[in-house]
Image 1 (cartoon, rainbow, N blue to C red):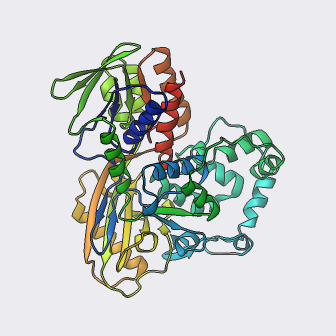
Image 2 (image 1 turned 90 degrees about the vertical axis):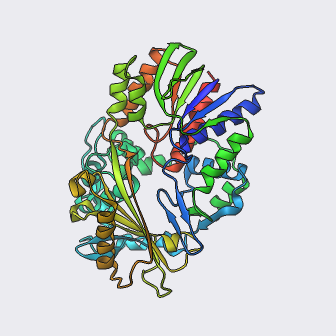
Length: 473
């Protein structure tokens, strides 16, 4: 029997791919999924009414690259193609992305023409950033922060006003701490191997690309042909884990909710005792852990304190999410994806997503405000109330967007330790963790956002690659 820890997207995806491999290989593997709460889906949660949808976690998915196309393959296989709502290149949410600097919203350049024109808050046209890279010397490093790398290659303004807010939007983190390998591994390698980013890009044009082959579903092909920017799910993103959970149940996966695991006891290379909080002990041949690394650290601390320490060293941040609904039909916002706030602005908010522009079937204006992240404790302390977060979010929104209307509905959530931070040295640390597991012949595999990427696509692909690696051993 294989046991999956966690019923979030990582655990559900692991179950999905184990079943797929099980069916294709004619095996009779028994699967058990243990979720500590009464809900499957992790941070993906949607509140749907007749007038609006509040997404409490992720809201859109990018279809780009192997990992993005893989997700679309899975979505089609689960019968969700008709639920897709795609945002194409000509949509305002694809073209218009803003940052808030010096008490003003600025539209970021979104075309080739735009990089040759000066646009606030940048003091020069962005083409000067390209020249900066060509003239900057190479600096040999094993790793660096994404902020330092971008400042070195493209200048301080690009680091402050483009990359730092982008990191806030992606992982609620500090670009001065996050590893450049998190988002810009290939660009960093161009600098290390070729002396600069532009030089590396030009050299790569003449090299044969060894891209991973992936068979595309009809849905994935359509995304490529129509050049989707992002997409959402009609009725809310929660539909994805809901359908995945149903798929697992229909294929006889033993799915146990409200089942908290207290300890993992490794007996040998093919037996581990999964000890539940109620005293029940479940023997498994292999464990797939999709729970956060800090949670897994507690389960292995008794037998493997060194592994526990490595797992605990992956930092996480807390994010406040405030969903706001304004029922008026009067336009309150400029059509756009939303805006981000650079950390140098010292704002209590990280950014705002214009959900009524990005998500279909919304009446009125729907906004989601993100607060805190890396700076949550610094800004709000450890005992901030949801009521206070709402007050802060509404005040900021009304000031920045100049909205006078009252909020018709709202929802506030504090997502404690929800996003792992891939700080400098993250990938080496994950390598050490997996090396320890391998050297000690522990029957456990790690999937999910703690290790292989924080986005929806990354989590799903992490499950796929780990399952296939185990199956092919």
